[in-house]
Image 1 (cartoon, rainbow, N blue to C red):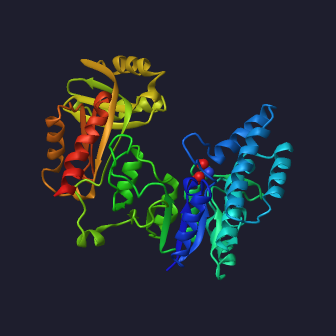
Image 2: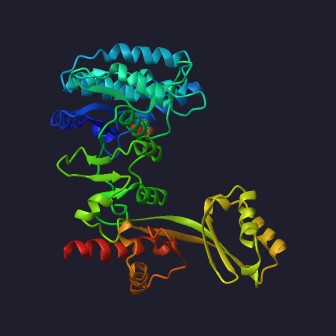
Image 3: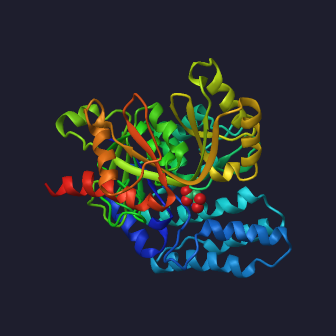
Length: 445
Ligand code: ASP
């Protein structure tokens, strides 16, 4: 058994968190690869090291002294080192980074140093081997990952007796320069290492006990999801749930490696297993009707009625082409006879809403045309509702019982989710009523 364990910034915020990481890694010898983020926030008022590094770089760009900010970073790492009685010569690394900053180092190099320093400390603390991400994570010239080279370079370094610690978030370009991934990119590093090492599991350690059924800012103490498949995960994250970087999926999916979201502060909790296909496990332990509920606010709905348009071949395509002309992505379409509602994100039409309406009036001469803002979309997601007659009916009647007016409804034939549009003002209530009925009450039975 071989596991890759990635620890996020909150798992590295101070020496207490480092101790938790060590006990997790030492409790399971199959955790052979450890990928770390930069140190995160110790408290709400604290700052993430990566944010501070971006700030240093911006100060330099505008010719403003960055010393005070850089000292915050130095103090954070020095305190962790001294608390843990480690001996890594951080001072000389700080000096190198300061020199590089003064010489106008690239933004990518500067911001990658948070992960680099955290990995140096973690490697010493675990008695593990430090492998710089610049020597194992490779980009191609077009910015995509060079997986064959990643596999080849990792294989050269594998096989020792101690675990390997690798900084997340960055890698090398073909010319040897450092390139960072998008924010939260250490998740991707972990997934690439899991792929290259043929791991059995990719563990992603964070500060929640897995992927939650609903956003904890909306539902009080939501349960975590024990098992979820990639399609459900995609729906949940597209609709606003946020635990894992989207691009962390493809390297593990390619090799069918499960992702296990775990909580560094509660290592006994099993967390969430993300699998390509849950059907085998579902046979033994059937899933709930609802896997998760997520949603996003601030959508705009364009509704157009034109008689006989339903039998006018190409009508919908022409309608949608207008949004394409304005480079607006369409998030939902609902249609009945001769009436079409197109839903888009409000911010994407803020400057062209009335132009689009003007084009519709002119081109289609509709009998009725309106645009409404302040719409929220809520997705009730669950592989458990496939072929269960009445499942969407149950959700709709729950909204009805709670006096929540549904503005639009859509469900695709994959039966994996039901998406409803409600007024922004009903957003929180709508999510809570589904949670109470289909998660909380079921749990009590
Ligand atoms: N430290 C980087 C960030 O804050 C990458 C990561 O933590 O995954 O975005």
